Image 1 (cartoon, rainbow, N blue to C red):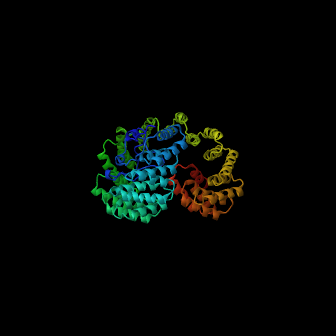
Image 2 (image 1 turned 90 degrees about the vertical axis):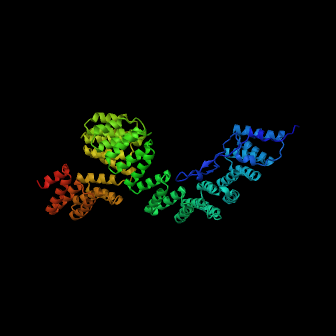
Image 3 (image 1 turned 30 degrees about the horizontal axis):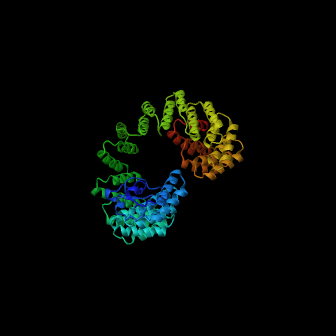
Length: 590
C-alpha cells in the first residue's frame, strides 16, 4: 500500500478555511476600532479556498493519507452532497477524532451544522480547539454552539478561557460574547454568566456595556443604567456607551437623556449616529423645532441625500409650517427619493390643506404604485366627489384592486359615503347591500348597511341587521345603542329599547352618544329629572347639536324654557346650518 504524508496543499483542496462571521447588533454604528464579529451556530461556516490566518500557526498531526482515510473523507463528502446527513456527519466526525487534524475537525463541524446536529458540531469544535489552541475562532464557535444547545456552564468555561487567552482583544471579545448571549432564551442566566465573565475586567468598558445590555433585556433597569454609566466613565468618547446610556435614561429622565446626547455632540459634532439618535429623541419628546434643526444640520452635510430633506418636510408638516414643508418635499422629490409616492402623497395633502384641490388631485394621480397608491386613489375619489364629479369619483374607486376583504369592504363604505353626501341614499344602500352579500359577517359593513337601511325607511332591515351584528359581536356597544335609539325615535317598544341602550352604556359608560340615548329613553319613559341629569352628562362630554336639541326639549317640557332657549341658541351659534337643531327650535319656539 502506498503511504504518504497528509500534505496541507492536498487538504486545501477539500477543507474549510474559515468560519462565517456576523456583526454585533448595536444601537449605533461603532467606530472602526469598535467593530466586532461573532460566529452563528445556526448556519454552517462558509467554504472558501483561502486558508485562515490562524492556520499558519497550526501544529498539524503527523498523519498518513492512507486509502482508508481518503475513502472515509470522500465518502462523507459525497454523502454531504447527496443530503445523507447521518453518513456525512458521522463519517466526518470520526475522521476528525481519528486524525486529530484541526482542519478536518473544522470540516466536520461545518457538516454537522449544515445538517442541524449542533451536539456533534460541538464535539468537532472541541477537537479543533484542543488541536489548535491558538485559534480564537475555534473557541468562539465552540462557545456559541454550547450556548445554542443549552450547555451554558460549559460555554462559560470556554468563554472565560477565550478572554484569558486573548487579552489583547478582550474588548472586542466582550462585544462578541454579548452577541452570542443576546438571543439566549434565559436572559437572567445570560446576565449572570456575563457578570461573572466581566468581574475580572473592571476597567474594560465593553464588559460593562455588555452587562448593561443584558440587564436591560432581563428587566433590571437599575443595573443596566449603572453599568452603562460605568462604561461611559471608562470610555467617554465611545459612542456606543453614550448611545446606550441615553436610551436607558429616555423613559426615566428624558431631559437627562437629551442633555447627554447634546453634550456628546458638542465635543464630537461629526458623530452621525449620535446626532441621529438625538434628533429622533427630540421627535419622541415632541420638540419638533429642535429636531428639525438637527435634521437640517445633517442635510447640510449630506446635500445629495433626499431622506434628510424628506424628514425635515414631515416635521414642518407637524409644525403646520406648510410653505416650508412644500419646499422641502419638492427638494426631496428633485433629489430622487426612492419612495416618490410618499412625497407626492404629502404634496397632495399639503395642496388639500391649502384648498387647492385640483393640485392635490394632480399629485395623487402621479402615484403609480407603492404603499401610497390606494390612499391616493381614495383621496382622489373624495375630492372628485366633493367637486360634484360623482361618476368619475366612483370610477376611480372601482379601478382600485383591493388587497383583501377588509380593503374591499372599506372601499364599498367609502363609495356609500360619497353617495350619501350627494344625498343619493337609495344608491348608497344598494352599494352597501351588494358588498354585504359578498361578506355577510363583516362587522363594519353590517353596521353601515343597517344604518343606511334606517335612513331610507327600512326599519325591518335595520333591526334584522343590528340583531345579527349583536349575535356576531355581543360586546359591540354601538350596535345596542343604534338599535335601541331607533326604537326610541319611533317611540316603539320603549322597555326593550331602554334595555338595549342601558346595555350599551354598561359596555361603554363614557360615550356621550350612548348617554344621550339613555337620557332620551328616560324622556320617552316620562322620567324627566333622570333624563335631564343624563343628558347634562352627555352634553358636558360632547356639546354636539343633537344632544343640545334633546336636552333643550326635555328642559322645555319640564318648564325650564329660558335654559332650553339658551342651550339651543349657544349650540346654533356653533352649528348654524344644523337642520335637526333648527327643527326643534321651530317646533317649540317659533
